[in-house]
Length: 107
Image (cartoon, rainbow, N blue to C red; front, top):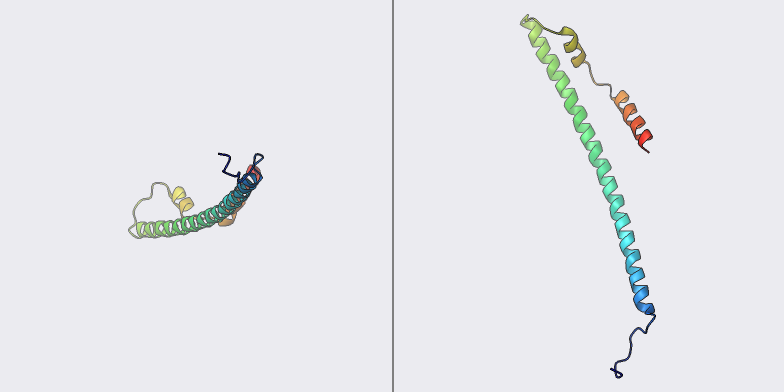
């Protein structure tokens, strides 16, 4: 095979350079994808939180309506204190402070 000239002789500089460039491009694309995935996860968690807050508010209002109907029909209530506690609106600022504290301790 003496008639075949070596394209990239022994220390293989062209092959080494091309593999290095490929590794750099691959690393950059993985980092960009991770960053995008992190943003998507943040948006997803924010939407989930808003849906949960709205559901909690609606459930509280429905419970208050049922309680009003219950009182209007003059039915006996077994545990008025628990009903009053459940009917209270959710304190979102308190929940946010708890979440922020937990995030602070995890980091």
